[in-house]
Image 1: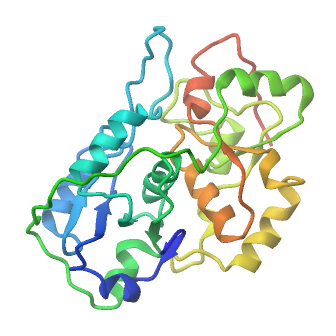
Image 2: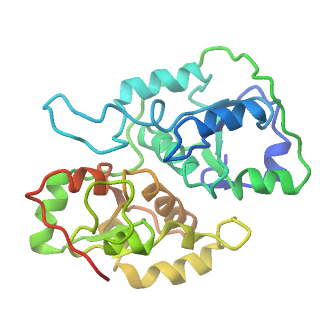
Length: 283
């Protein structure tokens, strides 16, 4: 079972395995059609396409009429139906990949764990690593039988916006923001309507989890780099702009042997939607 990362060479040995499901998670926050367009041009054999906005997220406005962020979690039952449509069973090995160092594939990795499915891994280095080995890209999309995955107890914790608000007074938990440093400081904000960060949050840009070749740093280096940020992973909260790239930090922590941090799914996009919530700027 692969539960964090898988290499291109290892994945290439399982392209036709009946109980392996490969999902292409390419996306562009500024061009929502880019991932599907790229998939149509070429993808890994037997891969299916997973769209961040529609497959890996739920409605932006909840039943209470409140904005839940740009990529709130889907309903668990809805996600299970989506996974069954991709042919996922309870014992299926799922592999997610993208062209962005795992930026979006990590969201699918986390979602599978959220519904209790541990056999999910991200292609280390993504499509760049795949193509660097001269491995083929194809255009046909193979049909798959409907899967039978069942919902199981979650393997990962989450926190709500109310939990994060309550934490402002105690700072009992460390909030870590996965966005680039300039957006964290409140500069060059081009996606959300307000720039800045949650007061007290620390910054760990998700791309800092990667080597120059786009592959994840090894466990020892990740542990060394993450150690100064919090006392223990279970008391940490990961967030980003919309709850997607925070999953990259959660994957890095899992690779580092530091499990247990929680995801704040609404992240900055939910937080800044209410002017009553405080905003910090600068470093």
